[in-house]
Image 1 (tube, protein in one colour):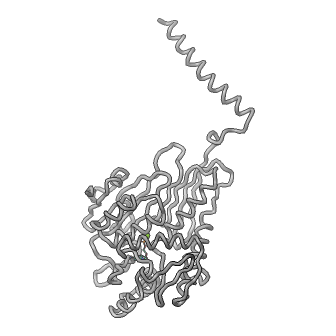
Image 2 (tube, protein in one colour):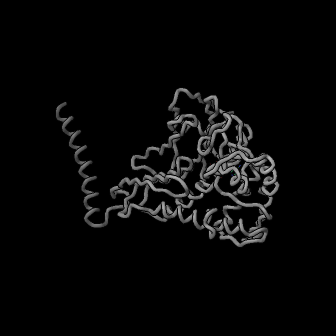
Image 3 (tube, protein in one colour):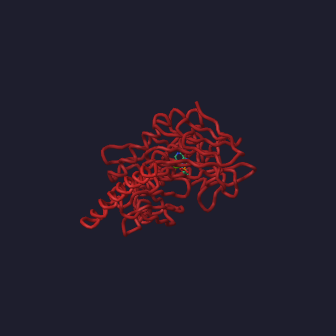
Length: 355
Ligand code: AMP
Ligand code: MG
C-alpha cells in the first residue's frame, strides 16, 4: 500500500519535470514564445473629445502608451469638430448648398449614419446642428428657445437633406451636420482598428466619459471586462449595475442626466426629438446599447432613447444589439442578450426582461 503511494508521486514528479525541461530547453534556444512573455497592466487618464478618457491596457511590449489621447484628438480636430474650421464637418457645414469632397473614411461613416437615420425613421438625425446650438445645452448659455425659432430651424434639418454621390457630399442650404451622438463611438472604432496593428497589446478597455466604451482582446485571467452603469438619478454618480463585455464589443449610454438644465421643474436635456426640436420626455432616463461597432452602439443608444422602448426593440434586433432601458420609476428593462451580461448593484431598481 505504502509502496504504491510512493510510485504515484514518482510518476507525477516525472511528468512535471518533463514539462520544466521542455520549456527550459526552448528558452535557451529561442526567444520566449509571445504568450509566455510577461503581460503588464497599464492605466492612464487623459482628456479628449470634450471628455475624460480612461484606458486600462495589458501588453507584453516595452512601449506601454498606444497614444490613445493623441489619436482621439486628431479624429476630433480633422473630422468632427465644429470649432476647428479645417475639420471635414466644418467645411461641409460652410459649403452653403455646394457639394464637397470628403475622405473615404468620412464617407463610410456617413453611409452608416444615413442607414441608421432611415432605420430609426429619423429618430437618429445627424442634421440637428443649428437646433443644438440654439438650445446650447452643452455650452455656456443654455436656454429654452422660443417655439418659433425652433420651428424655423426644423425646416432646414432632416437627414433626407444630405446627398451622397461618390465622394461628393451635399447638404441642402441651411442644413448642418452635428455628429455629437456618434463621435465618441467613432473614436472607439478608430482605436480598436489601431490596436489590431499592435500585436503586443493583448487586451484593453477604453472608456470615453463613461458613455462610450470599447473592450478589446482579453484580460490575462480570461475574465470578462466589466463596465459600471450610472444611476441617472443619483446626484453622487453612483452605479445601478454592471455590464460584462467581451473583446470586440462596444457599449454606449445615452442619458438625460449627462447634459441638462432645470427650469420650472422641467429637465431640459441634450437628446432632442427631431420631430419637435425639443428634448425627449418619454419617461426614460438612460438607454445603454452593446454591439460590435462603436459608431453603431453610440448611434443606437441615442436613437433608442428618442424612439422609446417599444419601437427601439425592432431597431436593436435589426442591428443584433443588446439594450438596457432605465426609467423614472427605477425600472431597468433588459433585452434577453443584455440580461445575460447584466448585474444589478442597487436594490432600489427592479430589473424586467423585455419580450
Ligand atoms: P448621445 O449622448 O450619444 O446620446 O448624444 C447626444 C448628442 O447628440 C447631443 O448632445 C447632440 O449633440 C446630438 N443629438 C441630440 N439629439 C439627437 C438626435 N435625435 N439624433 C442625433 N443626434 C442628436
Ligand atoms: Mg450616442
